[in-house]
Length: 158
Image 1 (cartoon, helix red, strand yellow):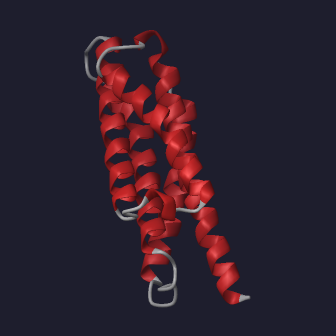
Image 2 (tube, one colour):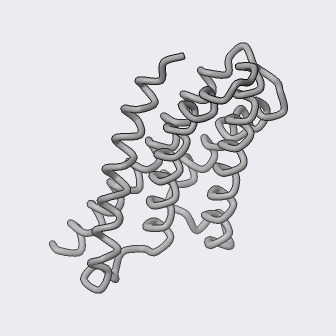
């Protein structure tokens, strides 16, 4: 099985991870950036990078493809659920979030659920599609955080 699209997503995620690494090094200059967004950016981009490359490893092990997708979906879903809960726990009150973030959080629920259900062995016929959707979603969230960081920095400089 060829995972070229996953590798492209991994390259984008690696670039975003590198960018957030540079931001963390320059943290004293950028101390006014919201820490929660920076952590979300880092977790999303590194998670996307790892899960985009993981299928090459999993499918190099002799196992049934369905079991491989089940393992991948379960791990990816669990990771996504962890970073989702971690992100939301910092707000305390869901209503304190900006509307665009509320929309992203609400739209993440079905993506997380699909990956977890895949981990439980459901929707195996659509496993590559669900996994691909998960990668696209997490890279999209990384890009969302990236834009927030850039726009926040631009608005602070103005």
